Amino acid sequence: MHTAIYISNKDDKPQLIEHIIHGNSIVNLSNLKGALFSEITLGLFIEEEIIHGYFDVQTATKNSLLHSSEGERKQALLQHLISKKPEYLIVDNVFGNLDILKQAAIQKTLIDLSASVKIIQITNRIAEILPFIDKTYQLKDGNLLEFNTIEASKSKNAITFVEALPKPYQPVSEPINPLIKFNKVSVAYGERPILNAISWEIKHGEFWQLIGANGSGKSTILSMIYGDNAKAYGQDITLFGIKKGSGESVWDLKRKIGYFSSEMLRGFKRLDAVGNMIVSGFFDSVGLYKEPTNAQIKITEQWLHVLQLFHLRKQPFLSLSKGHQRLVLIARAMVKQPPLLILDEPTNGLDDFDVALFTALINKIAKETDSAILYVSHRKEAGLTPDFIYELTTSDQGSTGKTIK
Image 1: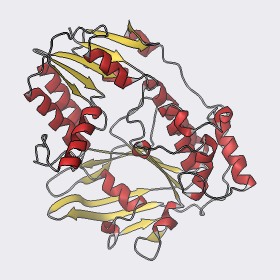
Image 2: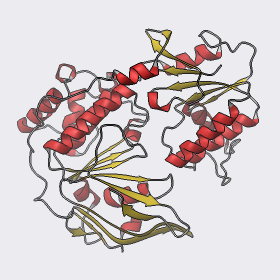
Image 3: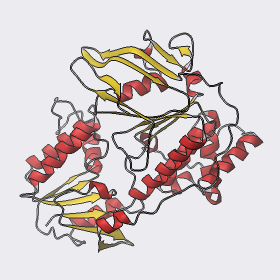
C-alpha cells in the first residue's frame, strides 16, 4: 500500500520523517531498507561536496549537485536512490521548482517504481498527491488522521483582504510606457546559447506571468532587469525609459522595482520585528538602518492592517508562518509602490492555505495599484489570473519567446 501524508507549513516535517523511518507512525517500515527523496537529502549531499571536494551523485551532464539546476538535482538524486534498490522510498515536495516536463518525468519514474517499492509521499498541496496513492492521511495536532482529499478540495474557503491598500508615498516616476522593452535580445554563455532574439514589452499596470522550462533563461531575463548582468550591456534593452548601459546605476533601477523571491528566506536568521521588515522596503534594505519618516511609518501601519498583522508588528519576523513571512516581504516590496513588482517562484514550498493568502494579496495589488507585476513560476495557481503570459521555448539556438495569452 502506498501512502500520502498531507501537512501544512506549521507542522514539524523533519520530526514526521523521523517518526516514519523509525516506525512511530501509521506506516509500517520495520526491517525494510529505505531512502529519503527530499531537499533534506540534497542538502546533505551538497554539504559533502563542499566539504570534501568530490561528489557521489552526479547529474546527466556529469555536473555536481552544487553546480546544477534544481530539476537536474532532483532527477539525479532520484536515480541515485533507486540504484540503491530501496524497499521503501519517502518522497517529499516531489514537484517543487520543477517545470511541467520534469514533473511528468519524475512522476512516471515513481509510477514505474511503485510496482515494486513502497512509496510514502509527504506533500503540502492536495493537487500534487501522486495518482497511485492508496490512502491519504493528514497530520493534525501530532496525530495522523485519514483524510478525504476530494471533500477537502470542495470545502476551500475564499480568503479576502478587506482594508484598502495605502496610497503611494512618493511615486518613483511618472508613468512610462513601456516600462521594460527587450528588442531582439540574444544571450550566450560561452558556446551555450541561452536566449535567441527575445522581443518583449511590459507596460504600465500590466500583470504578466513568465513561464518556461528549467534552464530556458527566465533567471537570465530577470537578472538583466533587476540585477547587474553584464550580458545586458550592448543589448537593445530599455528599462523605465532609459537605454541599458547609458549611465544608470543598479540602485537607480532597484528604486523602481519591488522584488520578492522564495530564495530570500533561505538561511535567514535575523531577529528584525515584523514592522521593521516592512518599513525597510523604503530603503531597499533587509532590516532597518535608517530612521523612517512619520509618513513612512503610517504607510507601514496601513500595510500591517491590510495583512491583519498589526497586532504582531513588534514580534520577530521569523516567528511568523512561512505564508505570512512571504506576505510581509511582498508588503516590503510594495511600500513604495514601485512601477514594477517582480515575484520569482513565490509559492514554492507553500501549503494550500498559504497559497490562497498569496493569491488574494497579489490579486488585490493588481486591482488597486498601478504597479506592473511580473510573476515568474512554472505553476498556474488557481485564482491567480495574469493579463498575459510570456513563454520561453528552448532550442539548440537558445530560447525563443512568445505571448500566449
